[in-house]
Amino acid sequence: MYLYSGIYQFFAPTLVITDPDLIKQIAVKDFDHFVDHRTFASEDIDPLWATHLFTLIGQRWREMRATLSPAFTSSKIKYMFSLISQSGEQFVNHFLRKNEDLITVEMKDTFTRFTNDVIANTAFGVECDSLEEPNNEFYLMGKEVTNFGGVSIALKFIAFVTIPKLCKILNITLFSQKVATFFTRVVKSNIESREKHGIVRPDMINLLMEARKSGMTHEEAEHDAGFATAQESELVKSTKTRKLELTDQDITSQAIGFFFAGFESVSTLMCFMTYELGLNPGIQERLIQEVDETLEACDGKLTYEAVSGMKYMDMVVSEVLRKWPNTVAVDRVCTKPYTIEPKTPNEKPVHLEKNSAIWLPIMGLHRDPQYWPEPDRFDPERFNEENKTKINPYTFLPFGAGPRNCIGSRLALLETKTLFFYILSHFEIVPVEMTQIPLQLSRKTFSMTAEKGFWLGFKRRVKV
Ligand code: HEM
Image (cartoon, rainbow, N blue to C red; front, side, top):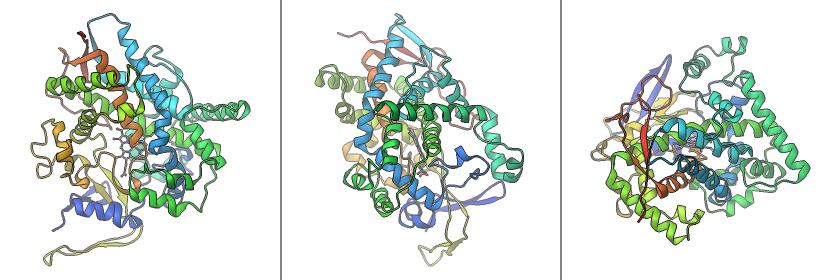
């Protein structure tokens, strides 16, 4: 029997699918019927929001995804490693300069500054140090783009869904005019100065400019073995004849989209990772040992290959993403009528009309004891070589599923592993007086975060 249930999102009936086989059917096998996310705002209401990859629909999404995918393969992410590593060193140096043995830190604010600097550097070609210059313009604008903590974004999402026509009449956009103008100006001047001076930098603007010049073709993508899924590779091949013209606005919109998708999510992952390491000293000790061995093996200078080869680090990050998937659920919209055929004679078929909404409940699956025994226990061994092979991939979906999965997953993992490598080379993470134990999730914010903040300590390691 298939497992699913129904809920209402305001007036929209929504099918919540909890069955891994059915998730695979919808997200992968019959993806053609479920290509889109629910749209919140059309292009005429908010062009910058409506034209980035997450919100594009149908054929335009296919073409944009095929155009952008080559920029996110392993070989291209490797290209950005030097920029990420530079931000990681900058982060740790900030705390090393403090000359204190134990530094109490609110991790959410701190990691948000780090992810800001990485996205500014890798997506916009702008170098900033938001720990040393807390009020730099880029950070303030980024906060405004992703101000999930405030009610205004949540209210705007609700308004877009329930009263789209009124939003258009009142000219309500998700991104304020100030934010739109700022990012448009940054990208435009960046492109102009690179074209004028022939500047090449290992970042996303460069990759998008290459995609536009067709310097990077879809044929090149075919030869790159690093696709997240075979379906994604197929999608790129099937779209390769339709080359997309990227305008400056497209590039700006994608860059803002990466900011929006990557700034908050990665810092959230880092916060939960700090919390779990602080509360599980045995696991942290083993990770520190791997960090020290890796540092020695690469003669004190971290490389992309070294960080990617850290097996225990990978197990720890995977377990954080399982226990605390920051995207609690993802949606799909039925784009062509579809029937879920019964698995057994006692079941009835389910007919889905065009535009029916579907939810894939990631958090529910990740905490389901039938797939993850003792789901509230933090145990990276679930992802060791032996156990990993037994995991049903449709019960572990931190980055979604199928061709519409997260395009930035490799970048997110690389950022996290690199930063924790640098932190643990110098510090141990410890609970402090203000650490909330057990952690309670906030009910006030749109994104998943701790009720009382993520207060933990960086304790300087005594090296023998
Ligand atoms: C820990 C960090 C991250 C998590 C947990 C995460 C999670 C997700 C999830 C669950 C989705 C929806 C997938 C689906 O519908 O099946 C998604 C989509 C997306 N993510 Fe991420 N993400 C992260 C980091 C990033 C970063 C760093 C970037 C960009 C640089 C990024 C860019 C995107 C984009 C553009 C999409 C839309 C893809 C499409 O519709 O084709 N994400 N992400």
